[in-house]
Image 1: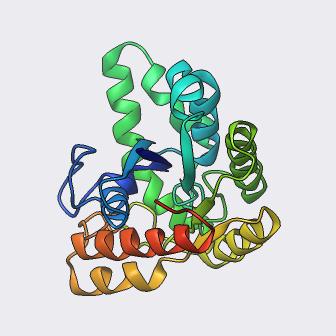
Image 2: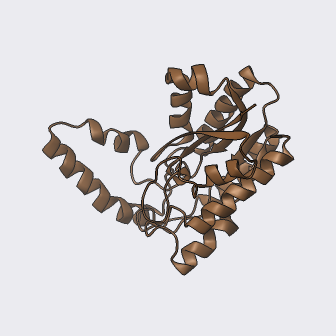
Amino acid sequence: MTQHVLVVGDSLTYHGPDRPHVLTDDRLWPNIMSADFGDEVTVDLVARLGWTARDAWWAVTKDPYLWGAVLPRADALVLALGGMDHLPASVPTYLRDGIPYLRPAALRRRVRDTYRTLSPPTIRLTGGRLRQLPQEATDHYLARITAAARVFNPTIPVVLVAPGIHDSPDYPSDRHHKPALVAARRWADRHETGLVEIDDMVRPSLVDGSANPDGIHYSWRTHRLIGDATAAELRVVGFKA
């Protein structure tokens, strides 16, 4: 009987060192994780570029296929969220998220280009004080997603993939990383979940240049390491294929 591992994440789950890839690509870490268990395990990957834990919660509650079909059949849950949450912001996130709604199209393009140009220097000027999502909100929405999964399966194994380091010219500050990592450890302990810390898996590719040039998305080697580590942590928290 096939078992399902639900992975809820952001673009780090499906971007490689060059571009986004189809979700079935064997080199992506969720599929590497699945392959570690053999043919008996299938991954349900739910992810989108720029997703925070809040965005993922909205998807869990608003997408009828997700809450009505995918979530109830999950035998394990992997939360690969928080990486976007802890990146520095130049403006409140609701302003950035509102750009696609601007009309006419010419105005939207001008505002988007201005945002992309001014955001990095603004982050440097402010020291990156503002997060994309406050830590308290990240913790809150991670807990709500976990609680929703436990409604259908009270003993479901859950693993949190901690936010990793980055070296991105678009987000020129890492002031929130260490506090976010501490918060991830605290959250996993409080909610009795597994935890995968990935800094040591990400750092070498940032140093040797094999990561995506954006300084955020992973090399294939990093995908391999995270996939294997997540599979191992799933076994620790009781998932058996």
